[in-house]
Structures are given as C-alpha cells and as structure tokens.
Length: 159
Image 1: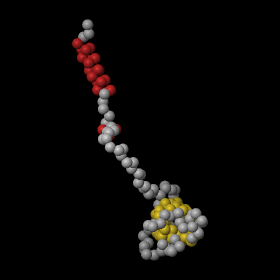
Image 2: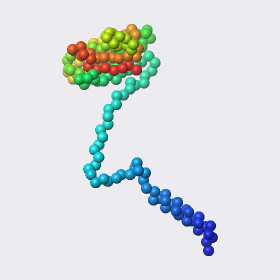
Image 3: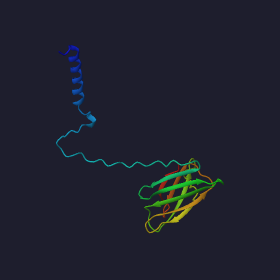
Image 4: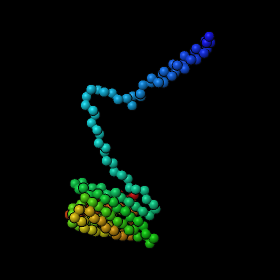
C-alpha cells in the first residue's frame, strides 16, 4: 500500500513534468502561417562605419561619396617624431585618368577657407588612385577629395 503522502508527491512530480514538456514556444519564436505569401526579405541598411581605433599619433577616415558621386576610399594620418603629419589617401570609383587633389579642413577652421593640400594624383584606367603628403599640423577634421572640376567627390572625418 502506498502512503497518501507518496501519492501526492508522485502526482506533483507528474504535473510538473507534463507542464514542462508541453510548454508552448514563446510568442517571439512561434511561426504563424497566415495563408499568404512568405514575408519579403528585408535588405540590410548600410551603416557608415566609424573610423577604426588607432594608436596615439594616428588618425583615419573612411571616405564616403559626395552627393552625385561613387568615390570611396580611406585617408590615414600619422604624426612623425618631428611633429610633421604624413597623410595618405586611396580612392576607387572615380573617373579614370583624371587629376584629383586632397584638401584637409581642420575642425574649428573657417568653413569657407580651403585647408592645406597635402597631395595631388591622377587616377588609373580603373578610376583608382592615391597619394601621400605632409602637413605641419592636423587636428580632428575633414579630408576632402576634390575632382577635376574642383567639386568634392568624397569626404571623411579624421578620428
């Protein structure tokens, strides 16, 4: 003969076991068939990446296209031991075999005043190119790649 306490304990264990094994999926994981076509795939929205983290005395900028252009690239700056900054630029997606220049505008400067031009270059047949040059000083600011007409074709912020 089974004691009444043993029957109650066995019944409680059975109820808990059944409720755990038959627990429905959370609503966030359930799939409901509404009888229509499958939902359209949502394309990811591109998010501009922040400049990569760099060490002391180094700055980088991801160059994004100016309105109406498809030019992208990178700009990097490194402070040399003598205090001079070396700046290098690489771009792609520009017009082939054209001349481009780089202008660096310092933060806090007069927006109407062009900054120094550390370098100029000519793109190759594929529309890629780059250059390197030096600046006496640089602070967090903008790098602008100027196209053959003098309009900015790409820009980025040093960080």
